[in-house]
Image (cartoon, rainbow, N blue to C red; front, side, top):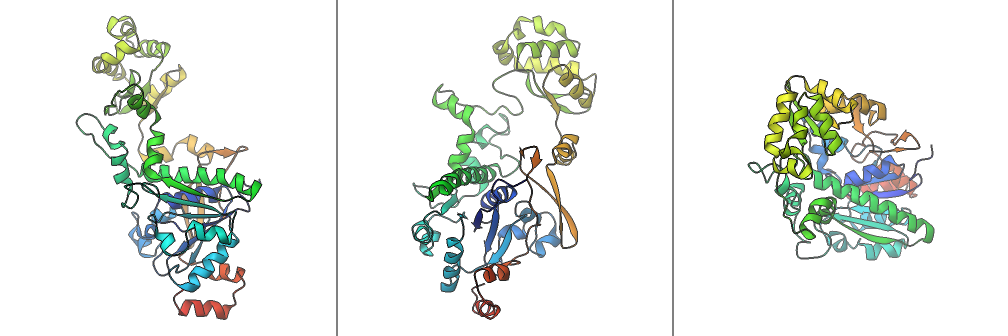
Length: 397
């Protein structure tokens, strides 16, 4: 299969998560992604993760998660020769992706206004916490800061635990997905008309955008959302329920699903109870209904109810650990996980969340060692080994 972004060249200057995640999604689609890193240190994520020995080698599990398939080049963008080389690379590339604080690239004289003179069709994407302008633009922003400012934490948890942080860097990830989507769209125009553009991705904006129903209720219905823990604010019974041996999610949002659920758990009378007759009645009496349903569910295991409820058209699913989630037959069937050989050791990473013509996306190489491809890339620009050695001596690479 010819991959969707085959032939597209991307310069990835990003660090840690949001930007590297965007670059990885594009690499999975076939783009040639060159990761530009600071000589001697590289991406901070190289030193992050649960495996200390890997961190010490600059190949931390956090780095491995979203850098497979990329080439690593070390380049000092503060050095005059480093700037020259970067401009040469831009002239041959389609995209520049960075997640510095606003103004950093301009101070290096490598901002979009400078680079578009080098390559008018260049797609330049800058990811930041709050965007390139506005009263918060210069403020530092990490995932949890954005979770708080976006309102995500205020509706996560229940009345006792909220505000609560989502258990993974959701705003960083959303920012990366937004960037990958925007870049892909911009490339369509650039390839058709040779017209580049500047993409300004805000993690705060991106996160609020994904909160569509919550935001709509606030803006249009003037209804302030409340933290409801594991229960769905739009319907009941819809949330987590205790079985004999564990927790299961059930989303009996439709009337026929509720009636089927009641019959399956041996409590058909609940469907006729005036307190639970329709959706709004059930929402008003949610705690009492939950108790009644759990009494019926307590006769069997979560696995039993998962199979029986789904077989009868009631959406349900066990609440799994991450290990259990990755071990599901469905994940294996879709080919979501990809194994790569790195330094005589096999590592496993995720691919994209979609198939293309029935096939999974993929990359051909493991995450790179710091500067692994520097010489190769410079030779591609026409530099000799002597010139490359001189760049190394002067601290450019």
